[in-house]
Amino acid sequence: MSILRILQYPDPRLHTLAKPVAAVNEQVRKLVADMAETLYAAPGVGLAATQVDVHKQVIVIDISETRDQLHTFINPEILASSGVSDCEEGCLSVPGIFEKVKRAEQVTVRALDREGKLFTLDANGLLSVCIQHEIDHLKGKVFVEYLSRLKQARILNKLKKMQRKIM
Ligand code: NI
Image (cartoon, rainbow, N blue to C red):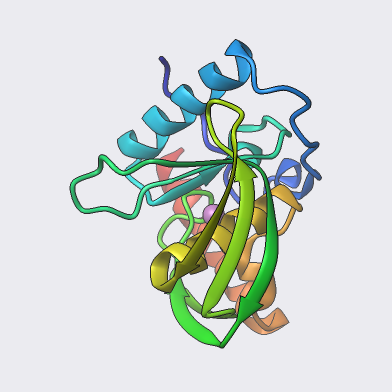
């Protein structure tokens, strides 16, 4: 397993549309294992393949405190959603930024697991928000892009200053 490099906003590669996985093979399972290791090392609650510059529809999520409840979603599809949630979100590609985003409160998602088996999951709360956030990544959308232009400009400024400090 290896820790992968996470693209940092506003890297244009974060806007790439991810392709469906044709077959869940060893290569895909290796990607899932590497993404999980990267997620735990960060640490974060969710990671989409887009964020590690692999443009396949693969997501890993672990919202547990014990860090041992990994969910893998391959080719995820939201079948139904309901309610409204207004959660504060963050993102490993947008470090240090936390903003409220309007999402559905509940989602029903269908995806393939690590074994290539189709499953359906009803999610609410943080898991639901996380699933929606990560599926957005696969579509090339970063959560800050839901915010006003003014807020986005402020965030870009802040990130530039932070990146300058690191270099
Ligand atoms: Ni994110």
